Length: 233
Image 1 (cartoon, rainbow, N blue to C red):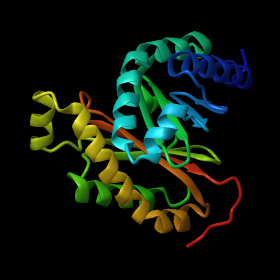
Image 2: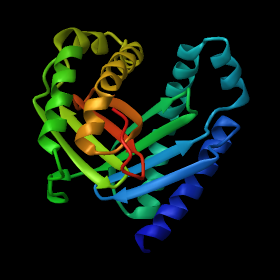
Image 3: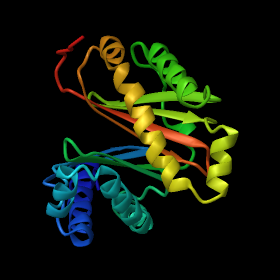
């Protein structure tokens, strides 16, 4: 099956799965298959109950509910991606931007290194800024690398970013609280650097998503870019 057909089928399957478990599915699902990555961008994905909670400033409650639900769906989504694309998904990440009603799901296949050339304009400068943000939030990553998957999707991978106190919190069972805290902190720092990213990429950034796999001491950041070269500085 060609990639476009796979992307269309996976979009439909993911939409149905989320609708079945959340009561309301996203209005639009955009899938990018660029082995070893599968990026699933969700638009207008908020249930009436979630909307009500967010209006009453219960953002953390919505995040906690979403995280609990996604942990139950992780394996199903990985199996679905594998069924449609044939890619054996080893890692799975997700994040939300509630003010936009959007979300992102990321599946990562094994053996990343054999698939990509790493160059795109200003790649090293982008990765340097990301590493500095990581150092401010926790520690300088042991490894930082990035891939421009298409003209609208940039993915950045960091490995070796956990500090000892975070590792201890995870061991004590505070993984969910740590995720929520890190998500808020890192997104704030990433958006503070947004103008620098846009200048280097020569594109507007529509959204930034971030999540972690604590067991692997690894993080994924995804920038969703505007389709036209029309930056705001």
